[in-house]
Length: 223
Image 1: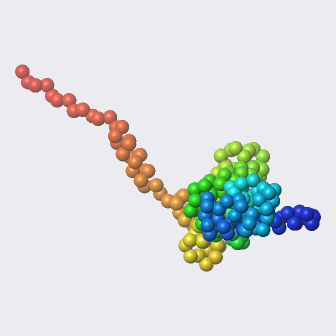
Image 2: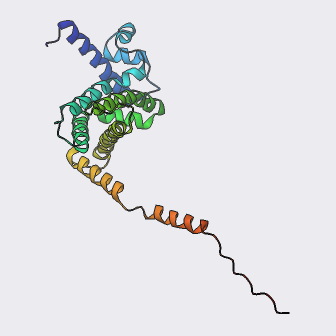
């Protein structure tokens, strides 16, 4: 369905405010930037700013809503015969493709890494994405809800895969995100499948410490 002229205009203004704000946060600092700075840079009034965003926190997390839409859609679009791992992979790839196509991704990662308040604002909206993703995974079965362990595990693993891939792609010098994604997934498999020798050693030590001590009875002294 085609968007109306009013809707397109509102979207244009919202994106202009968002782009101006992210540039300011990256250059000036999240805490050091106020609403007036953002409105001036975007070419709108302070009153207009509040028509689109309630706070700086709300503004910073603007792109997360679309990110959640992409992940949920990918889970729903994955073939019915796909395994849980395949569905998770499809969703993670869709999330990575979306994030790497967004021009502000690098700046947002830098902003949230440098400022606790910005990181908290960003993470607070990610909780909503996690819940939506849990619901999407649960909807693929008839006997699970979003509150069950399996859908929650799949949602968390999907989000973690995307986060680690973006980190590797942006910080570790990978030429493209598929290479970063492959590296991350291989390392995750290694970590999850490697023998836990330290845990085995700890269990053995505990068992030894709990073993009853055998006391040797001395023979009676001769009279």
